[in-house]
Length: 240
Image (cartoon, rainbow, N blue to C red):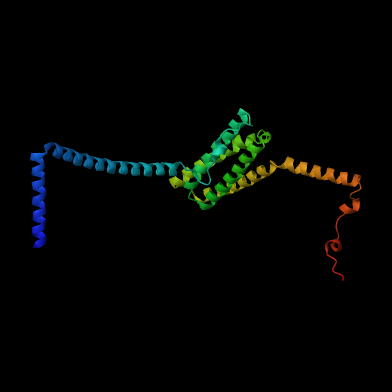
């Protein structure tokens, strides 16, 4: 009961104070009223700004997530023209990279797991070839057929298979035939990648042979040092 009386007295006191302010100091009351209105407007504006920035930040994160390349995508530095290459070489690599990215975009939509897996491995081999060509541009001319024919043809094959698969027309024999051809293409890609290092293998052999001849000439080694090792030569001597 006392609390109720105290509340009523407080309310009456506040009302009386407001009336007194209106009569005695109308200007002060007006300033207080304006201050209250400005405070309310400021709070509302702050809430709106917080909501706007929170929404904008979330939208930005979503866009960044969509633009962020997957593990299979091309690193940014690999997309930029190499100043050490000619315009023609950069253009050839750019075209090959575009074909490879086109192939990678189709792979996730393939339902047949073996075909999807082999296609991914083919892309891995093709990616290794393109990266090697960037470091060994003198080899680009040799593998022009790979860049201008194999990659776009592979993209076309996957596009047609995907169309058949999505339409429900692709039968088991179509999938098996496609898988067999993709496996052959994978082996071809592996051999193409190895072929890029044929000159290095040859140079290594020549340099080792030249070093051997120099050692024989200078008397540091003899022909016996290069004779085939027998089984006894390879076993350690454990006699005490």
